[in-house]
Image (cartoon, rainbow, N blue to C red; front, side, top):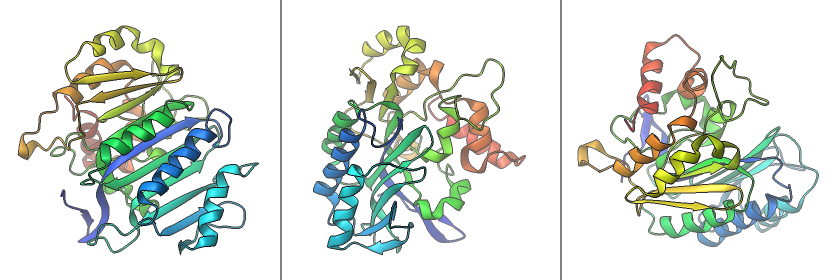
Length: 312
């Protein structure tokens, strides 16, 4: 398995198969709640026993990390039926599936409400045999939701309680070229102009969060890739599935790390990145928010540039 990332010798992020979706509107919106609730049920069916640590942030809970118990289990399931919902409300589930990482991490499920959209993130062991089947089941649900954008694939999971170390992510993207190292909060200000804290420059347009083994694209981006989409469908090893609200573009049969040392072929990923160039994440926003961006540190700038260009 790919090595854990370390900071000053201490583990801080773990290799994982990652699922990230940024969804328009409230978690409990009619267009979203059934899909998100079902995604949580699918996670529980496959990984619930291992995800034995909770952190709830809704009425009666303040985000404290606690061991799972029957009462907390029922309260977590009930969260998806609770209304109204407020900014910051959500739930997290963690486990201890990686022995070398002595703090809560995988398997992980997180959902969180923000002002105009919500975050959904699921992370499981990168060597789990169920990855493709589980990803397909979650994709089936997300195709029914009002997804703005999303991404699935191999990458490094930084537990939210370690978010202060985001500046250390992206450190191995030159080797693991398909690795997804973003978090939803890291990219949220570049996917839409409305409600964004980014100072948009003339000619800049919002873009999707990232490119992965599977890339999810909401309909607000479709007009900008109409021609590219027909070309994508003709590409080798690329599958395109489209619902009324979401495009799901998959590069290859299984996710890979794109390990340059193992000479892993990332041609399918490169083709997706090329055809989606019109809606790639804006460079200005990346420099402002990714991996400790917004500084004058040339090392940070180089790391961001390497991450954005890793499919070149």
